[in-house]
Image (cartoon, rainbow over all chains, first blue to last red; front, side):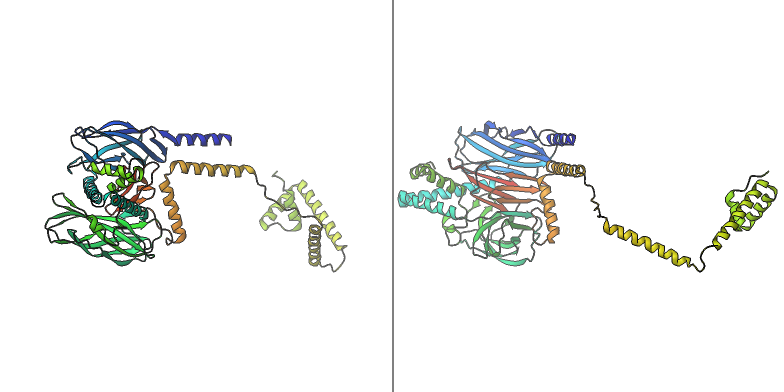
Length: 359
Length: 205
């Protein structure tokens, strides 16, 4: 019997052992961002039926280009691992020669393979203050990064105007209002299954109401989706380009209201489609949302949250458009608004005013 | 001279119970063999003596009834013996060794499972069993055949074919998170000290 215990312990020791974790940071030679240091100190890999890889890395980076960097996206992947991950810093303001840091916390499970597992960190894109972009854009991050920068410009302009028109007290009220909104936001954990809208048991077709944003270049209408117990899927709707510019991409924010009347932003529905001026089209997506807590869906609605024109420029809703009743509490504040409100919260009004003056 | 006839055959011959062919063989042998003839005569004398003794038994004895009564008496005696003798219950002997070996095997199997089967597979099997138990009504599957991306207060995660990728920021909770119907999930974190915003995402392709 004792021998068997020894054998079991030996088997356990052989099966559960920490492996070395190799990492590879691969930036293009002409990258405007260079790596000053990389600390993968707390990263490790464990073989337990599969490779359990935990990456905890701190990268110190420097803007080695000539333009100010507004945002950056790094791609994280491992050979044989499913999918890809990314870590983005959307609220940068790094001038030439300035340094900044990025933390990467990733957990991967991949099939066992010979040799030590490797984690690769590559540059997906860098956005500059003139909205020019550098990078392979494997994750289509350029579109998101431009949207973040447009939102940042919009919100800085808004808070600057508050300061200019209502003084420091007006800016303070604006910040307090923003912080209150951030605290009130209700969110639900949600999963998205693409390719098959399954398990829509006892499903029913439900109309999808669209909130009208008059300034939006695209009008959405006639939305339908199927809903079941804690599930919503197979959304489809019509769109019409009411601008005089060709559209190549748009994004709809999907809002769900439960039986208690609580609304929350469930998902975004991006769609790639070519729409000439005044042209209409239809969007249908074979995807299903599954909420991690029971939700009895009463109704659904949506609004056009961004539009990309054929020339790569984008439209986003203005602050005034988002201020319409029923919309403001649901729309997430921009990353820049969250950064500014955090500065106000942590360092006070004067620090915020100084920060706004930098732009 | 041929071999002597065995004694049992001679006894049967004396009683007239041998088959015809064998009886002829014995008759032929006895005519020529004095030793066997003497033995045959002895057997016939014994037989006559036995018949004479039987004639001395009481008349009108019903042998069948006598046998039945004797059998009944024997059974009654056995039953009475069981009543007065304390019955010993037979307890199957249980040895601790098989139990210990079984427990060890269970522990070994559980350990091997824990070490070698990814948690996602274990969860999938558990869900399948629960689905079988509930007829697939009460439990919603957490993993489809295709990729599933999810966003929650614990970060973003992609699960596909037993593998998974999750991204989190150590010690931070996302201030917001969402999924996209094009197959991605994202979470936003704000550094409380610097205000720097970090957005993590997973993509199913």
